[in-house]
Image (tube, rainbow, N blue to C red; front, side, top):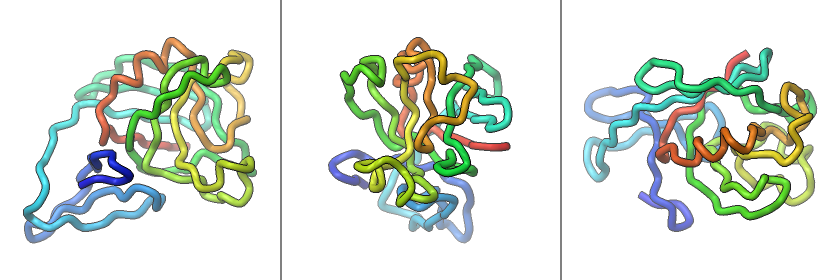
Length: 168
């Protein structure tokens, strides 16, 4: 239904006897079960794949590559969480470090919240623009995926529930 007033759209990743297995927000790499009724299915066409080794974010629609960008990721201490997550919501930001573009909050959270910067330990990981292009291709974030401003201006149009797959 809703979390903090935001409608939840979670990817369905399995089905058993009418129940649907969905990715959970706030618990990395974990699924929950939705009953057969009380919710509506929404067809999603987009998927984001983050390649940790090459620092690439690939945007796909219906299995076809639309865009590929060089991104910044988390270092060993505060890694970008591997596995499946999803776009939870769009968050408004006019902050200069985020290049004045809204952020995409993901369903995932830092694997080691005690190690991230103060004030971020209870935050979700996200996809957001970054003001300094010298970071792309490096491991410098608190686990978020930093993208060029032009990329984020396109990505903020993604629907909640869009699957994000973070792989080696």
